[in-house]
Image (cartoon, rainbow over all chains, first blue to last red; front, side):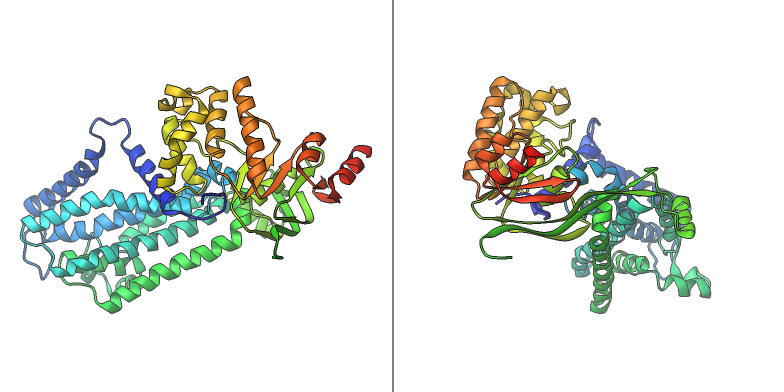
Length: 262
Length: 244
């Protein structure tokens, strides 16, 4: 039975995510086609520039497309991850009208941002898989772990994004700080380069970068066509669970102040 | 919670913190932490309020402007989180307050019905079931396919009320029992409110009309500046309030 009270329902998440995605291409002539066209063009640029013009390859992997594949494998999920975090950070403040007039759980709005970014990435992933299949580099049966890794990755993004969103209510500088930090985080994660080129000291730091644990799982899947081990998956699940759990605890403690100060 | 009670409120307080400047930047926070100069002003909207509401009861809330009546309603409907005390609610609550909250004015009336209904806890298939009734009640006709930004404020209020009235809650919270819209819709919505009041299991009404309170509520609480001044049978408390 419907009624006012703070709970997230599946219907609420679906409807808000749908609205968010519809709004994205509202008024454009091609509409949803852009969600395929944009990643397709981006990938085409990478392939042409890195494989056909610059001829970059990565060690231990012979295909002409190796660097492009390596780059895209890390970059696609990173884009969803970083955009989720950056947009989630400001969402509580941006939609304060909803928080002060409806009994909405705080987690709802960041969750919708992350869901929308996740769904928005699907066309790109499908295109990438199609490209791999056409060039004879389709991932083996190991591909079944892809959805698992992706869901855990986005739960991790939700944890970080939710925590930042709650803190952003108290500290508006977090908007800029997050923008800059996420950029630095990108370069501390071996996405555009391979980890082996890193100097010893930096490599030791990067080894503790949880974002790299996720990215490495994608690179294993797409580039080296091996599934992450059960231990790796458990590690990813732990990272996602602890971050999200921690964020929820912080939000619970600060909730009345958040609703007051937002 | 004692059996038979649907709402229990113990020592509830709500403290708004208003900052002199709305913007809170790193510089300000650092300044405040370092020099212990909190620039905030605290406003106590509720201060140690305690009461119960039993099944089948009607509770009236009276008091002058700024007494904390609306804040109490917002807390009971879980829009706001109290800064102190305990609040227990059992049963489905619906609040006829802040009507039209969450409307997206760029969307059509149709889309806003769905959006608003899921905010109120509807499942999507329940929305589809109720959809025709809501449109019919609003009497908006073809305007339902237009963006809400093109609506007059009366039309918005009609749409909002039509959505809110589609829930028959166990616990109903009303801030002033007044209909909305033009004259004919006003009559229709006031009648519907009375119907909802009749059907709910417990009722909380805020009103400045003592007649309304007398007719609906056996018990009344009187708030003044956030404090509970008196609680008891309606006639007694209202007499105290009026002789003040």
